[in-house]
Image 1 (cartoon, protein in one colour):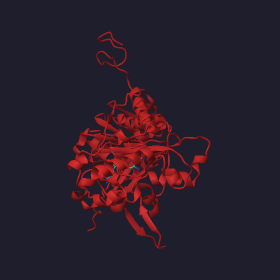
Image 2 (cartoon, rainbow, N blue to C red):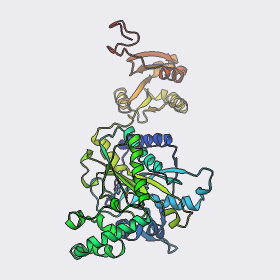
Image 3 (cartoon, rainbow, N blue to C red):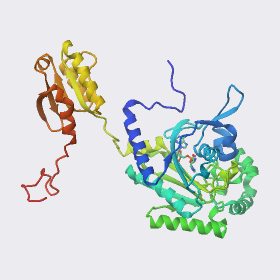
Image 4 (cartoon, rainbow, N blue to C red):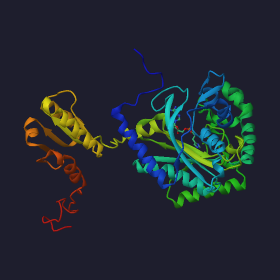
Length: 443
Ligand code: HAM
């Protein structure tokens, strides 16, 4: 018996409807914000992630799936989406296209060798978005409002946007100096990883999961206090734009994010729904103004975010979100061997015309076929036996309106389409009575 690899899961047919509904909601909101989809490979040269996410980040130092391909090239399954999108942006010279701003989104599998638990997997999916070409605080605010709008469209309201600023190169250098000074007296009491990070990337120490409750880290200086005037103004403007767009947030001075490429604004969206514990961050993102040039592209400011799809789904499950309900328009019940060819012909005709149509393929009896029509949540059930065949008729039940008719079998498709086009009956807003309301005199 083969079993799935630790940290992976199967998305079963009974669960895909919700997944697809979430994808659809995301695509709809993405359209409103004028983002277009990009699809990049799920593996890239290992070097790309070392240069972007950073050698000293947990993701690159401990969590990547690396392998040598048969040509002895070092390849990595992508541990996040931004690096591949930036690589593609540069390689395909997207920056040279007409518009100075490029907006793109992506969905797909991501791989991190983490300790699996609820909401944390080794293969998971992200929906992410990246905007290239604007250093305006309006862009940061738009990106955050885009992420929040996606949650709103899924009716996920109980979330908090945490926001902070790391500043640009100069601010980060000032902060680094202050942090190193603060940590110096106690660094030997921190874990081995922190001691290594102290040398090459002290900011990473603030992310340490082992020492996160250590007083030294709890009392560490805040990035916000070391921002240059320019970076401070940028951050304040982002907050002002969020205010006018009525996007709620809390300034979280401890937020530093675990990837090296961020500059200025960083943010995370957390939820208390779904009991996700430490995995309650459903979205993370920020500005990364140096990454395009660090990867040998033209200097281009950029900002983006990514959602963890599985975490979104866990939240929706806790909210008892149903997604799109699975249904079929029509189930055709055929009774007797002599009707089979007609049934296949009608089924095919209806499918070709765009009706979701199902029929029995296993010679089940009438009762069992009715059961199947229920399982398929069919609105119409057509019954076609030897008598109907002789008369050229078919019996049709409409489960929604509780009606039953016998029609010419050649009319089956047209009849159903006409019924589906009928508007749903309007009802009185006062008492719920259908059409013009005689009951209460309301409209
Ligand atoms: P990240 O914070 O590393 O950011 O990941 C984004 C989201 O992916 C997290 O907030 C979380 O919901 C989800 N996630 C992370 N690890 C796992 C896991 N092991 N299992 C399930 N879900 C997980 C990035 O990846 C950046 N590339 C985001 C970004 C885009 N920044 C700018 N542009």
